[in-house]
Image 1 (spheres, one colour):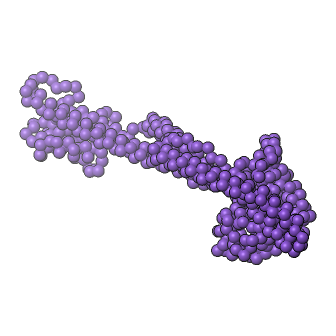
Image 2 (tube, one colour):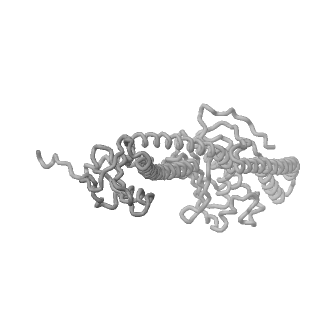
Image 3 (tube, helix red, strand yellow):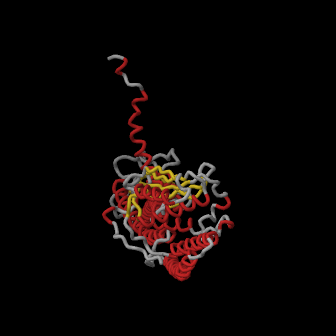
Amino acid sequence: MTTNSIRPPHDLFEPCGVTEPYVSRMANRLHRTLDSLFGRLALLVIVVLLLSHFAGYALFRLEGDQMQARYAVEEAVFLVDAVRQHIASTPNLPLPSRVRVVELTSATVPPLPTHTDTPFSRFLDAVRERMPPGTEVRVGKLGKAPPTLWVHQSGDRDWIVVPLQPLGGPRPLENTVLWLTLIFVSAVMAGLFAAWQLQQPLRSLASAVTRFGRGQPVPPVTERGPRELRQLTHGFNQMVQEVARTENDRAVMLAGVAHDLKTPLARLRLRAEMMDEVKVRDGVVRDVDSMTHIVEQFLVFAHDGADRSEAVEVDAQCERVVRSYRAVGEGAARVLIDLKAGPGFLLPAATLDRILSNLLDNAHAYGAPPVMVATTRTSMGYTLSVQDNGGGIAAQDLINASRPFVRLDPARGGSGHSGLGLTIVERLVRRAGGEWELGNHDGRGLRILMSFPLASIPAPILLAPLVPEALG
């Protein structure tokens, strides 16, 4: 064998690198399980049952041994008293089997015990306590035959020898462990079933809360479980109904006002086009266009229906929208794309168009070129981001940036911006099952990062037909 054929010691551990991801996944799964309500209830049930089970078993063994010892003491004292009464009342009658009397000088009298900390020595002490003072108590020679108890009370002419109830050692564990295991497994299964029953209403309520936070329709949650949980579910259902009623009233109000303004704005634009003075006409037309844009934003914000448009590939749709934006948007030629998500990234067409148009308009109005539209595929799902190279948003203003009707720059309020653009984007992203993150990227420029888990991506075979949305 040559030295080249000998593997280095570290090569022996190569399989560990293969199994490490599996071990890591199992550890993460175990952590998620224990971090859930069911996992913690299950762990609590198992620990409590283990402690109570084996504490009860230990107490049972200890109490059983003590009861056996007390019974043996009582039986020995009873036999000795019975033999003494028999000798005193009927000395001529034979003694019962295995009961005898032995002379004090007999060589068969057992010696005094030398060990004072044995089961028999403790037994003898207990018997001696039950006898009159001065009574001698000894145990016959231990062997294959059952042991005997030797008792000599002051005034007796002989030793009274009676059979001794054998003090058995610990009981065999095979049957005990089997029964303990069966009882423990049955108790654990019953406890886990009870924990699962308690977890189900909470899981349904948590799912409903998640949908409510995303702005998605939330059907009433079934009120079940303990009284406190039923009260919590009932309060949540009432809250959802009140919020839905308020949102509906606000949407109706906004849609009504915006709809009523569209016709006067159209007439105003038509009259402005008929003005003779070009400078005044252009100014009025710009103001009318700004007002029309605000009205359209109100209509989009007030629209609360689900998007039933056809799901399209995000990469292809982004490319079409950016190409169109470059063609019609003044000064918007420097819009770059970096699309790497692939054909599996699907979103409803109307939702995607609104997201992109609002973010591109926001970047064009407040940011600086170039604007980057990018998509990626991650281990958790897909991401869509829009980033400009402007000054970004101050850190203290990031929280308010997505609130409705909030304009961080009040001086720009007259340019057709109502403070609803980012609010609409956030609502659309959450209704599509995603999450968004608003922040300054690398210290310059505003970046809106939208993440969509794989579970929220619609399947191509489940595409809904295109339904035109009547916003006007």
